[in-house]
Image (cartoon, rainbow, N blue to C red):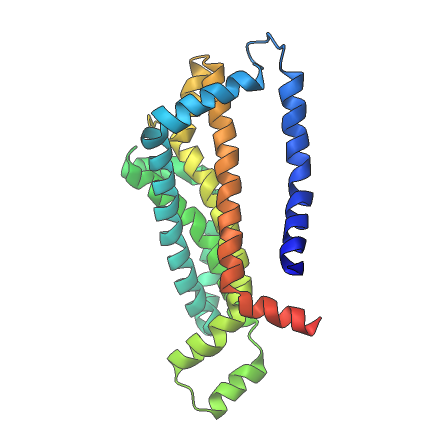
Length: 259
């Protein structure tokens, strides 16, 4: 019960400021006649109409599909390459200059390049998201593998673990907290690139909907798109935190015992 009460208290502490801001926005904009800053009540009614009934399958579903397909492709490639390069310093010396050059390019700036190769189809957006999500995961995986305690590696050799067992039972668990931090950064970058890729030459997706609404002076629709992006980003981060806590429950337990 104490654990439940502490979680409820932390939750209430975390949401008081958003609730206060929403209340202030609702009351401040109640009598607004500015076409660019309509009342929040009007935005909410339009939000329900757009994203609960009408546009969800047309714009939200493609955006989430491109985001998660590209993200999982990117992190799979990042973890795989990062594990290989992190476990072999000799090999990483040959590839690190290329990796440092490619990761220095802003992810959003690569979208026009992918348009040249893939056109304006969904494949372009998935490829752009995958490449953007790959590098933070790759770098964190390399760092995690290189930070493996040498004592653990020596212990594995004493027990005559195979290279696969050494990788899976020693290096991966030791590097997983650092890898998860890279996965979170990759998710945030992937979300930004997903929206940016929809803005350029796309008729579908939340980013495209918001841009078209702004260009067409449909201010209420544009506000609903911006709010939806914020809510989706918040929800995705909450889900990610829950999955991370579940996956690293052994690590969190060790830290609590140590403290």
